[in-house]
Each structure stands twice: as C-alpha cells, then as structure tokens.
Length: 321
Image (cartoon, rainbow, N blue to C red; front, side):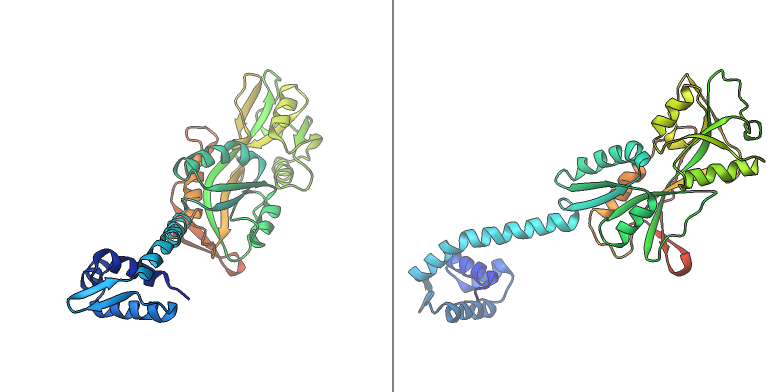
C-alpha cells in the first residue's frame, strides 16, 4: 500500500532533483530519503529515478506518479486540517441538555458566545427535568446537562460526574401589587397558592417552607411555566414562590426575597469526567459568562472550580480547564 510520506518524499526529490536537497527540505538524512524511494519503487514496481554519475534524473513514471498524487496529498492535507479543527473545537458537535428556565435565561447568550468563536460548531439542545437530563448524560446522549437543586430539596448526583456551579438564586415570594397581602410566609396561611407540578423539587420546597412557617399551603393552580405563574399572580389568583431566574420585574407584581436560610436554588452544569469533547470547556465558560449580573435575586458563582463527584457523593474540587 502506498504511504503518503513516500509520495511527499517523491514529490520533493522530483522538484529538487536531489536526494540531498530533498532531505534537507524535509528534515531527513539523504540515506532515509534513498530508502523511502527504494521502498516506493519496490511497492509500485516502477523505476522512478535513473542514477547518473553526477546525480539522478526522474523518469516519466515518477513524473506521472507525482501528478497522480497531487489530489491525494491535497485530500490528506485537508483531512489533517479538519482533524485539527475537530480536536481544537473549531468544528464538531456538542449535545446540551437544559431545563426550561435555563433555556430561556442562560442558553441563548451562552450559545451566542460559543458560536461567535466557533461558528462551525453544531449544538444540539434537549430539554428536560434534572432526573431526565442526568439519565441522558449517563447514557452518553448528552455532553453537558444544566440542572438545579433547591436548598430544601438537595439531590444526590451519580458518581463519575463533574459539577460546575453557575449561579445561586434567591427564592422570591410573588404577590399581586396592592393586594395588601403580607410579605411574610407566616401571614399567608389563608391564601391560595400557585405551585409547580406535584412531585417536583419546587413543589417540595414550597411545602417545606410553608411547614417551617407553621401551615400547609392550599394550592389552587399548578404550572411548571414561570410565565404562566407570573400571569396568575398578576391576575390576583394567588401567590407563588419562584427562583431568581424565573422572576421578571413588573409593576403589577410585588416581589420579596425569602429570608429562610435554605430558601435558594443552585444551577449547575454537569458532564461525565471522561468526556473529552473539545467543545466542553468552551461551553462551560460560555455558560458562566451567560449568568446575568446585577440582578437582585441572582448571584453568579465565579470561583472557576469544578467538582468531581465520586463514590457516595463525595466532592473533590479541581481547577476548571
């Protein structure tokens, strides 16, 4: 089988008319060049050079083989360039999983930043809740998963994942403006509540916050869409608790940060520790840069640390690559 290096050597010898000069140009010894040409002649059964008293002369067969090798060597050179592009993340594909709030607030600016520097990269976006995304991550169907956990409903993440903390959100009590309702949970035991779907971490967090305030919330409406929750609150149909990224300031809705020490939600990016996708580091940095700054209920995590999750959920901090 013809070897690309032999064809490159042949081209250099034909161009220079000398084993010595070709060796110098290619960084080999003249003996190594001679051995490659001899091997190529043996492989092809062609006489490529006529040895003369004061040098060598390329045969017609050598000239023809050089002509035939031009598109082959060009394709190999292009392949090398494409491989380099893939290895550095300039091209390639990354599969990102996200929950809806992050898909609205974090993903668009993150993808805008990534595609500005890697315009040929292909990003596939999937949405789901944390348990669904982590399952897809473990199955190898995702490269990165944006997930969350509530302070009152912490989660145990599987072994072998790396966690990048992105943001800590305050939990915010929403009530219709001028409703006259108390800004304190203890004063809202007799009102209707709007909550996320039963069984979700948000619904469990609400139950535990209200229990700490001494009552059980009467939930009248449920929705996992914070825009719907906001509209229901604005219409005076109940009160709700949402995380900082789910809050949009409005003249018709009054917001109050809850002071309970566990009234927060963390958002993080997870990936498998063995994932070698060259776009991975760029995606994590883009997600960090996408966290909004200056919002009263959103607090970016800027320590640049990754956390390796190992057996029994133990965490080992390591620098972000």
